[in-house]
Image (cartoon, rainbow, N blue to C red; front, side, top):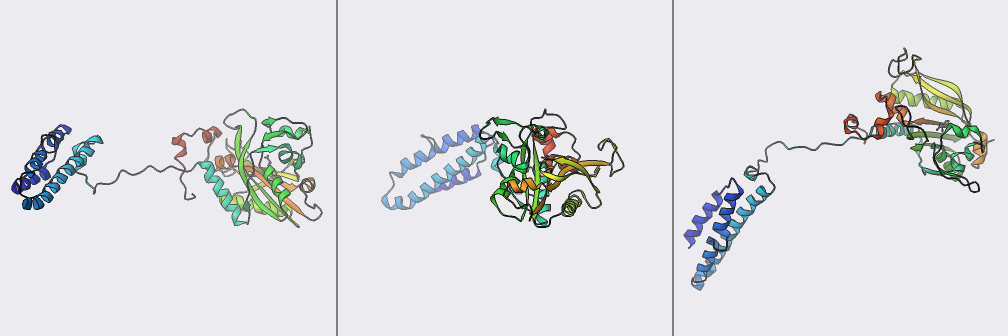
Length: 344
Ligand code: PHE
């Protein structure tokens, strides 16, 4: 019996089926209810007790070998890959994973944050659903003032008594919360999503992303604002990018300005992108209006400050020359996978 088992064992180890049918024949032959192993166990019952001790072990080993051989091929056939997979070649190159990539807006957002961090700005966040006070009134927008129309607001709840509830139209609301809840000096940026009721087109969307900034301390001047933003532009768009400030109006800053940079596409010579002016607008800024400071409990005779706000989409458009805003929210992987960066 021992010799028989040795012979069968080499047969089993040499067995390499090329189809599921061959494997099934193998199973019936060795492991089936009328198979060789069953016969051997039947015969085993008749052997003498001394022999049993030795043979029992051999027989069990043999059964295990047959079962393992069977399962090894069964798995390969069941995974649909056929017999070739059973001869797994670990030296073959792997199949590799396709890595995802970060969204261009979050790449640029991280880049903006990194630049301002170097200047000592911290990052602050706040709610996207805001009340009238934080989005408008504290920021010096008088009730019924046409300046409120500058930002087409999505109102959630109209409430004359307690103030309307709306989707925030800018992250200046986070500045208000910060000033109300702390003591100057403040030096922070506020990244976040904002909402405006605009028809969706290549140039406008009903939501977009901003990074606003606030710096409040004693003796902060417009010169500080200019130098900070100049530094930001050099870091973001490269040394030598020019900036210019144009007077503007915002209810919460006085004086107010808009800042342009020399066109990133033509370098300032004039092209279709910059409408042949050589300049493109990137942000609004100004000195925080003393009314706003007082509204937030800050002594405007002691402290001054500046604020600025930019759209991340706009910065991304300029940096990567993307002309259609809608690409940012369509989740088309052909677009998204073009953006790779070391910033995680
Ligand atoms: N909150 C303004 C906007 O969303 C931007 C801004 C911020 C302008 C701070 C001036 C100062 O349009």
